[in-house]
Length: 208
Image 1 (cartoon, rainbow, N blue to C red):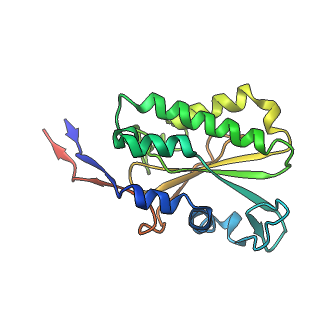
Image 2: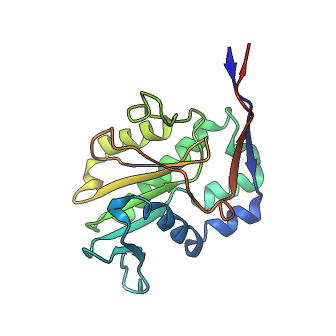
């Protein structure tokens, strides 16, 4: 048998509260996106006073809206019970809460004709494995949830491109454009670890 000891590290409520400020998570997400050649010319929009999107491409003028998959309700649950972040017993509850945030965000942006990138900071219990034969086709529960929502709420997606940047249990992020083909997965290993409220450590693989 091959196994690995995985340890989930939560840096604390202060770290999370600091990160979910848009002045922190938007540059964090931008740093990840600009590692993708297609988005290397993205910059923050300085003026968003009239509802402008968060990022704009300096080369072609295309704009992108950023949305964090967390709200006050989720944050309150974490404050009351840290096990909400990693407990298998509370996993389905967290997934359903993320579902609500996703739908609420799409409803708020219903009239926008834009590209929305959702940032999911919670790792799935079943990681995507980089370098595996199935990495670009395997859907974790977050993927399945969002794909289902897209199928059942098509009216919210008119004239929109929806992408997901999600934290993976191997301390990477993965990017996929959801309402396109399933094999467009990109792993991104470089991010600002000092700003991120979570960390996962793994012992070396052991054999029995």
